[in-house]
Length: 322
Ligand code: XMP
Image (cartoon, rainbow, N blue to C red):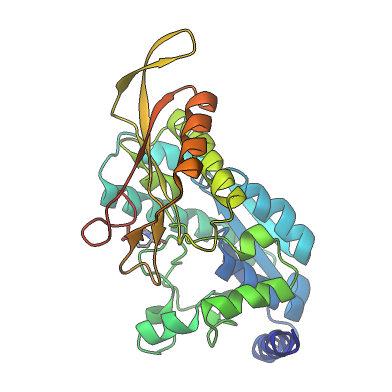
């Protein structure tokens, strides 16, 4: 639209003015819409003087890494460095079951990997600017200040080094989420990114109740992909705030699948409706949609022999299980 085009152009001009004719910037991409739109705006403003970094922690859902590496790059022409850090994260998470411990480890490893990349990029010359996808509600929440206190660290893996060597570039600082999505459309970003529902920074790492392993991740990834596909096909994406699929990796139950008895794992479907994630209600997903998800998951994911529905509101239940 005309106004959105103006908002994007103004943001591009403001970045150009802030970074100057020779300044360089770094931006971490998470796969989410905020960092993607922020990066796309900065790319328009300063081109290859922006380097994006995508730390693939191996905890994203099916297709999401490709969305960043292939579709986002194709749409924006952004200069991107990808770090495949899946092995490193798995190693660090080995044996860990406590949810907060998992978050701490994932956050710590993320910052280490990102800082290594930062150093590599700065070997080509100084970088003074760090791009952040801070939105207006984040600004308000943190008291409207600038600097490290304002960095989007809020229990988020995207919360980057509280590093004052950088000036922050925050092109989304005056925008609300729906405006960011419209800006993303205006910028021609992949629709799956623009419309992505909230997804936690620690990713599938906190959707496996129990230890995180490569096998468990691939089981969960398949089940989650089926649930997302069927919910989308049923036209429920905008109605449902998000739908975590949770693997109860240490629980087994008896089933009959194919030619015999199985002893597999359950997954939990956790569809919720919400305005802001502070409170939530469980979504009344039509039975036939639930049936399709259940049938497909138990048919297509060998290790899963039971699909259960979480019918708890928040409070008392949180949206995520960990
Ligand atoms: P809960 O489970 O607390 O989740 O009801 C509220 C919202 O926050 C997301 N969430 C996280 N996001 N890092 C994030 O970036 C996290 O560690 C994290 N934990 C929960 C959750 O998906 C929901 O949207």
